[in-house]
Image 1 (cartoon, rainbow, N blue to C red):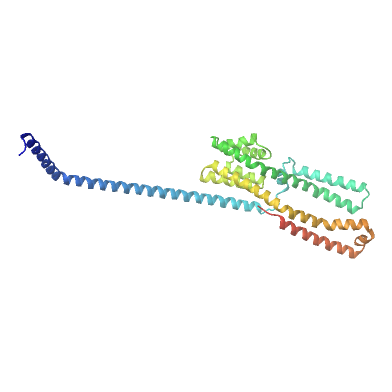
Image 2: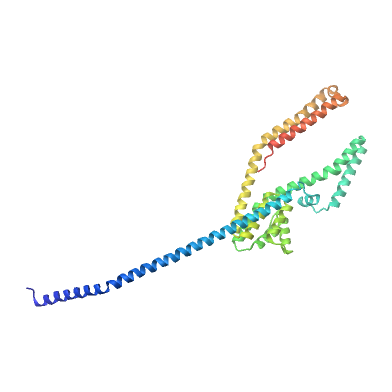
Length: 336
């Protein structure tokens, strides 16, 4: 029917198909066995991978729990230490002098206080004032005025530290990100920083040179600068030393928090200025009215100072004025 050449081709194709069918029939079981083996091996590998992932996840969870427990222990220890330090409300005179940035000893301060008391007593005595006025001036000048000066200088220095501390933290963050270790970053602030941050970091560096650890040296800063900002810095350094982590990121967050606290304090102060002005006007109004009445009608006001009933009225008025001033002060004194 077909030609001889075409018959040979068709016959060859049929033979090839038959041979392929026979080979497939013979090797089908092997192919299926190899396929099942590959499937089992793949499932075993997946099981091993799943177990390895589960083990890694458990290890990460365990490490996170350890770090969390370490952070909690650090915070608890720092909180207990802060509570012990805050039990004494007023710091000793020596600490207040150091916090004010003065290099006086307690003996020198007592000598200066005595000199001030004798000087004011001598001035009032020369002026011919009564003896009780001389004694009052000596007590106020010897005991009250020097301590007020120390308190004023201390408050001003703490305010200057709070204004400059975020800038120092930003410099430390840039130094750490550039590759410097933490002690070298602190030395950079101690050498090129602004006062009073420069002096406090110099004390921290000196404490490290004497063998104290970095967290303990930073914790001592809170004794010299009793501000929450210094305490936050000590907590961050202590947590990083015990639990690890990205120190530059933690210090950057602390700097941002301190700047936000500063902005909030300024906002609260601005909003409370009206209340403070009203309190100052109300508190000074009785004295202004009494002075004007005395200038216009001296006999009308002299009775308060010469009669016993006038003394009682002045004493009761002083008590109620003091209570009112303290109440207004507490109402407008906001803590951030």
